[in-house]
Image (cartoon, rainbow, N blue to C red; front, side):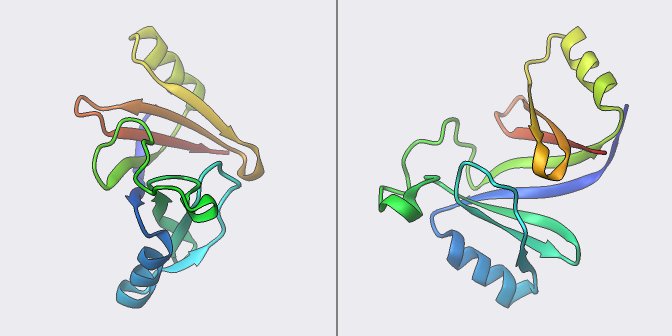
Length: 132
């Protein structure tokens, strides 16, 4: 069980589309495929890797016209979470359980990906991705 590499940063923003344009125009990232998630966002790619994930402060603001600053839960600033790629999903999860480390599991069927989420001592969300 180990981490292999940094996977992506997730940035919470009031202007997902404007941020995507900035990342394209300024540093050359390109928008690309994104799983069917429950909130609005854009994934920005460096080659074949989605390295910056942009997410709306209010996941439905782009549709409903609601206040984009509505509560999304614990707010840790614009960097919402940091993601890593991990190995040995079952062993990693068992170790977290054995040490009573609070976490939750998500399976993204459309891209066949297991994810574990936990918070660091500062409240920053840590995501560990386990590709098949």
